[in-house]
Every structure is written in structure tokens, then in C-alpha cells.
Image (cartoon, rainbow, N blue to C red; front, side, top):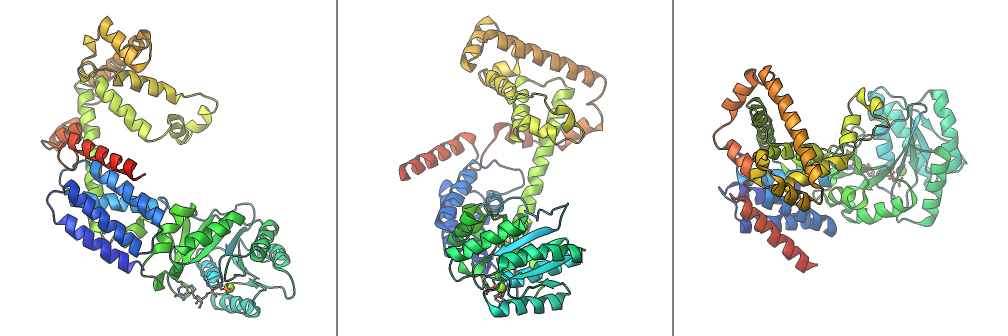
Length: 479
Ligand SMILES: Nc1nc2c(ncn2[C@@H]2O[C@H](COP(=O)(O)OP(=O)(O)OP(=O)(O)O)[C@@H](O)[C@H]2O)c(=O)[nH]1
Ligand SMILES: [Mg+2]
């Protein structure tokens, strides 16, 4: 599984990890090699282009993290983008609660539908569920027998109905499910060598009759990136909810698995790597990305360092609050952090107990934007020392942010109020526990400076920005 791409990516990584510094040329060369590695793995062209562009952009804007080399950071950027490419979050089966969950498997002939049906049944039986297998492939006479044998091997009942159509079989299987008290009904459908209308009509009729909660596209990994076209064809006629990649054990390249999600939007939910009935796993994009890169230790090292940076930043903020040094610049940064996390109301709605109370309450993201645009129109000096903002400066700030001078006055008033409160809290000792002392001690000299200056991989923000601009220009030219 993925052996060839792991090997070629490792070659790229060894070369960047061996360098104390990375020049723009080094990054460009590494990116060229990453591109070749992906194309050789039979990854879809468009997927490769967008992946390489994204990695390149991030690599050029990477900020220095103390204790982490640029090469290690580069590996982490590739890892992060690979996780996203594979779907980001793990996609799980959406179980029905009020009725047996119907899972319909579909795919080309020989893709592994019947085997996968058995594998899923075994897996879910082990998880304490009561699965029922349904033989809905009347195309191939031996297909029903094949499923019966599998059911016998794993101790899962198989619903069959001689002489009936797939639609009848699937509809009747729902009654059988009630009888067996089954909670997972797995429909094994027929395949064809190519996507054709007859097959699609049949599958669509089955879908309407059995109302599956999940329609999984069973995809033979060995077909490489042509999986993309097939999946698209299936998706055109059926609302696919996920994919199961099979025969990963026989595929060293990985083109299908790496292209499918990005180019069809269908999340991979399972991967099967072997003929045996226990050879199936849930698909976790992060674990798969580490496996492909073979760089688990580098990735976790960088993650740890990034976490420390976040903690140090938070602690530095605490110290500032304690010393009543919190200024508009810090305020702007904090707002940016919050906004990065998503719309404010959505965030608040996630807090248990708060969601219900917030229903109907209007929290306006535009408010935050207004505050940000006013602060952004101030000079650094004004942000750090709002006391110097006189009538003239106020008029300039208002003009720059497209607001009225009274809005600027309002914001400054609110900010002073906030500082009064934090000042009071500080005098009450809220920020003066062991925390802030530890915070000061934990801040290694230089760490704060590098956070503050936002230095990039090349040692200066300016240079990184220029490099990014150059890259953008190049991209524009290509178009
Ligand atoms: N190596 C390997 N072989 C597999 C895997 N999954 C299925 N197979 C094999 O692929 C062949 C086809 O599998 P089936 O499950 O019969 O495929 P199908 O999609 O049901 O085929 P039709 O019903 O003819 O459309 C069988 O020989 C399986 O043993 C896998 O993960 N790894
Ligand atoms: Mg079959």
C-alpha cells in the first residue's frame, strides 16, 4: 500500500531535512519532486496541481518555530495538506436510530462489493450490531451462493429470494430485517464492466425501494485515477455518501485513494487490504497521511512545537493583562484568533447549554469586522498608545476605515472600559497566580520576538511576502 509514493516522497524529505536553511530554490525543487512523485503514483492531474500550489504557498509563508528546522516544517506542511486532500476529518457511518440502517454497496464488476459486504458485516457483528446481508445481485447466478458462503463463514444471516427482482429482494429484506431484529442491512448489488444505463436504472430503483442511509461506492484501488471518472458516473445517478477502497494491498501507487475525495467530494469511509474477511479498516485521513509519508516522528515533533508556541502566546497575553499592558494591537490579534475559528455565533452555539439560549439572538459578525477595520486603519503607534489619538487622527482613522469619527470614539471608549475591567481583575489577583510567573520564565529569549515579528522560513517576513508575491505573479502568467 502506497510503497512507491512513500519511497519517492522520502527521498525529497531526506534532502530538505539535511539542510540547515531552505532557499526559495530549494523549496521550488522539492515541490517539483513532490509533483513528480504524485504523478508517478497516478494521482489525477488537477489534484496534483492544486496540492502542489497549496503546499508551495504555505511553504513560502511558513513561520519559524524555535527548535524546528525548515525541513521539518516543510514535511509538516506536506502532511497537513495531505490530510486535507484525503478528506480532513474521519467520515463515519451515519447510523439510523429509529430503523435498521440500510447500507447499499455499488460499484463496477469485480470491484469487491460482495467481499466488502461480508467484511462490513463481520466488523459490525464484532461491534455488537446485528447485521443482515442481502443478496441483490441476480445478474450472476453464482453471486447469491458466494454471499451465502460468506454469511456462513462469519455467522451472519443472508436474505435471498429466488426468482425475484433486485427491487423486490431489497424491499422484502426490510421485513426480514425486522424479523431478525437486524440493525444493519447490507445490500450487495450487481456490477457491470462499465457504467451503463441499465445498471444505473436498476440501482436507482433499489435505492428508491430500500431508502438506504448510506450508499457506498466500492472502488478497486488498482484502477488508479480512472476511479475518478467511474465515481463521477455513479455520483451522477446515485447520491453516494462515501467510498470503500478495496485491494489496497495489491496497489503500490495509491492514485485512486489520493484522487477520489478531492476530485469527486465523496469521502472515503473504509479501506480494505486483503482477501480475508477481517481485512477492512475505517479510513482516518490523518493516520493514512502519516503512513504515506512515513514521517510520523517529524510530524509529531512539529505539532508539539506548534502547541508550545500557542501556549507561550497565550501566556504572553496573560502577562500583558496582568501588567495592564494590553493594547489595541493585542486586541486586534485576539479578534483575529477568534474569527479564524469561525463565525462567532456558530462557535457559541456549540457550547452545551448556551445553544438553546442563543436561538433567535442576533450576534453580528459584522460588528467584529467593523472593530477590526477601525483598528487596522490606526498606525502601530496609535494601537499601542491610543491616548495620542486626537481629533485629526480620529478623522483620518474614520476615513481610512470608511466609518464615522463617532464610531472611532465609541470603539476607544469600549476599549478603555475593557481595560478598566482587566485592570481591576488584575488588582484582585486574577492574573497574578503562579501562571504568569511561569509564563515569564517559560518564554525563552527570542521566542516572543519571533512570534511578534512573524518571521518566515527565510528569516524575514518581508522576504517571504515578496516570494509569495512572485509566486502569485508566476501563477497569473501561467493562466
Ligand atoms: N487482494 C484483495 N482482493 C480482494 C479485496 N477485496 C476483494 N478482493 C477480491 O476481488 C475479487 C472480486 O471480489 P468480489 O467481492 O466478488 O467483487 P464484486 O464487486 O462483488 O464482483 P461482482 O459481483 O462480480 O460485480 C475476489 O477474488 C476477491 O477475493 C481486497 O481488499 N484485497
Ligand atoms: Mg458481487
